[in-house]
Length: 435
Image (tube, rainbow, N blue to C red; front, side):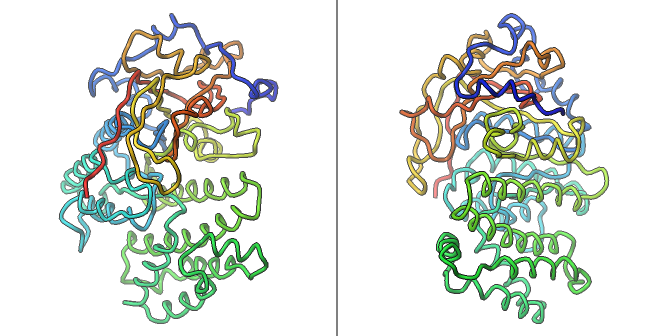
């Protein structure tokens, strides 16, 4: 997709009230959500894409998870998609991959796997909506040979100390010489006792960093596949990816305290994008993947105010790397409702009320359409120059304060940022698993 001319970004200091097309035109194009069959048109459009990226305007909304689930099931069962990669921790969510593939040593249920998650915010994945999808995946996979089973993976850079531990544990039990080498490389982290921010602060204060050591480990595992003959492709990928998490997390935290915000943001983005590409390679020729992440990650950053700050995201990198014709980006939004979130990082989760959207936002405009919930597929008419207007587009994170909701709207050119957009007038909170 061509880069957007700079002139369209002159308005990013304020929101414009124009819509990308008239309300009458939206009414004609809106496809009401009235059951699984209402997805037929979308599924036919995305069936042959290499990547389908499914967003969310918050990490705590039931409807977003529900409809991403419905789309994912159809892409997997009807069109042979190979895996789901989500904005979650790799090491801990790999246990769910083991469950849905019924690998040796897995626990009896998806709920048991998800109740073991302990890194905040647990509700993103420890919820009934993900349990339902995982149990469906298990049932689907049980009918398939092992090499055809669909995977479920975390793609984020966090939980790096857990990744370090599981990589060492795997090597210690089977490959003592490799264990000794990797353990020796990782000793540079020992003074920081599992605290990445402490490590990053120490480096900023002049202590030697661990970048070379973590790179050495990745290269050692990657360049010596034949040294691990007893590991299946899945198990070897698990080992290698955990070392990549450790390596990229080292950079992410170090850059977070030493650089401008966009540098650390992009470090994390490139890790997630790289993980998705590695999964496409793992599943082989003609594989197709599904990505679940926040709108800020899957909606092309080139067509938001993120461009002005130098921030990229998975949607943009996927379009650039695979070509726009091979990638389909789907955003999710709502006018008002309930959401699970915390008032600060690490705070207890609670159900919060999302107020009605501000008047100069895409959510406000879509709320004027007759249907309670619907989606739009954007075409060339929507992307004509005369229709490209900047709108506010709500983004709610795991940390949220409804009183400051008017500051949650990102300037966006909607039909360029996404290929399709789902909208709900009123949304409800996720159903979090009880411990």
